Length: 292
Ligand SMILES: Nc1ncnc2c1ncn2[C@@H]1O[C@H](COP(=O)(O)OP(=O)(O)OP(=O)(O)O)[C@@H](O)[C@H]1O
Image: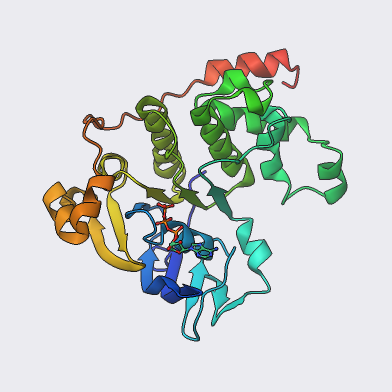
């Protein structure tokens, strides 16, 4: 079901956000609006503040300074350096995907995806891992959507890096996330796994209207998958506009020598294809698990 939200209200609004770690000013007066249903790339050289910005939007850290405010889905996540009392509830609507360590390796893929339900099921059911057939079917549908239905019974530690990221996306789907924050989800993946992860993010963005903010090291992926790019430099927004406008020359202008870090010479040139809908695989696995 596509996310319905007023287009006038940003899905994510960051106002005058600064963050200081000791002597390092990691974010400097950052203000951005991301509309519902946008897929936005966050790029920048190492240390430019991408992860810090994502952690602040997710309410995992508090900004420095009196004027800052972060609003997610029209709810104040933090303001003036204080987290909202509702932060935990707001986080339930945000799926966060990190570069690594998204899954509990000793648990099955299905259980890891079902963890997405924990915010919406009674605590005792979550504690004992008692999920309903409907919840299990939803988890399997989510796994099928991201193209890894066949891994449902595997231990998560046996998945490849790209499969783990796609399982984390499936978990965000089951969670019912309206905003996904993905912090360098493809940083340690080979190009074809990276493409599959970006395609999975793109598919749920297009089909469900989920707002996606994805930090990326390489601008090629931003150009291929994200209509809009925010480029950070030394904690400041150096560019905010169409990804297509980010030519290599322009990147050099913004970042100087550091731009080489952002340009991947052998990156894919083709346009992303809409993900296939492997429904038959879901049906097969549902049958095997006898939950239909
Ligand atoms: N917890 C922390 N304590 C101290 N300094 C920090 C902390 N987190 C981030 N920083 C500093 O803040 C700056 C921005 O870091 P951040 O991780 O946000 O950059 P990034 O753009 O995500 O980098 P990368 O691409 O290498 O992950 C860096 O100088 C970093 O060293």
